[in-house]
Length: 203
Image 1 (cartoon, one colour):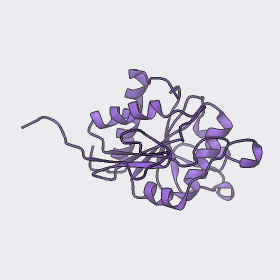
Image 2 (spheres, one colour):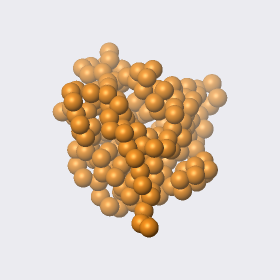
Image 3 (cartoon, rainbow, N blue to C red):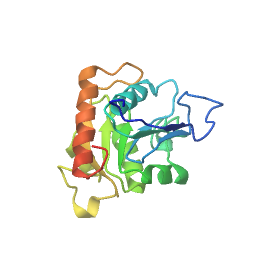
Image 4 (cartoon, helix red, strand yellow):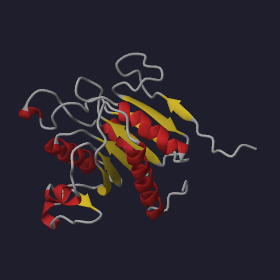
């Protein structure tokens, strides 16, 4: 008998930018056997590189957390298209894919305003608790001021725009660079604590 938990990962849902095989391409979903956690990555491109997502996914799976990975089809660029070049959006199919899971780990970048708007856009459409992973320093109050429900700071009732709620925030994880063991441990702890509070059975 092996002292490990087997995980079956269906890799990938779609062809994305092409036949990616094991590569995390735009518009793809790799789904594990049990829909506990989904890691959401921005589309790969010049500014949004999914490298840390692979590492944090591996780190969570090593701790026997069942985690799927979704790379958004239009996840790169600026959240409001009238602000400049690039686009960000989430399709009805992606909303359905995220909604099947009990917890979302959303990986964004280093522009504070973009991080908040992207998280708000996702949580406006999915009623799933979320852990935010980003490079820029943000806190619960930043999200609450934008109408995002959070575990520690509640927006005014009239300002709430999201269905989902931010449960934890892990900052200092740089896109396109390796994730340090300390930050990986911080994320795994946040995921396990949140899953336990949600009574998810894989912990």
